[in-house]
Image (cartoon, rainbow, N blue to C red; front, side, top):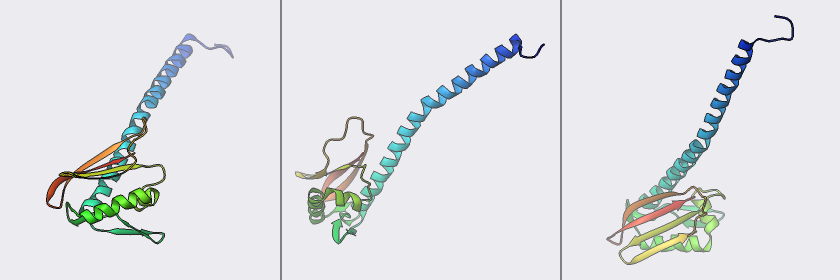
Length: 156
């Protein structure tokens, strides 16, 4: 074989390599968005579960910038206090961004909170999530004033 020339085996090997490399590249490119979606959703789900754990098992208050936020809503585990619920909803309605910071959420996250017990309803936060948002919903069963109820916490 002379200089500057190549044979058919070299050309066929090069074409097979290009097809194989393209296949691997497209396979990886199709898997990454699914992985990112699952990773983001699992991260939000874990964060939402952690926040509801604090809400239903403690009576902790957080102070940020001289403002106290009543984040822990429980008298005892799974037994929520109506006074603390009213205070949480009031904090949420008056200073939503401050409460987000007290919950450990960053500026890009939003939440919706609802507790239903008997005929009582406490809710606050953003009621509409964006259409293309990755949404994580955590529902926990609690008692409020001796009545069975549920706490719903949505995070996106």
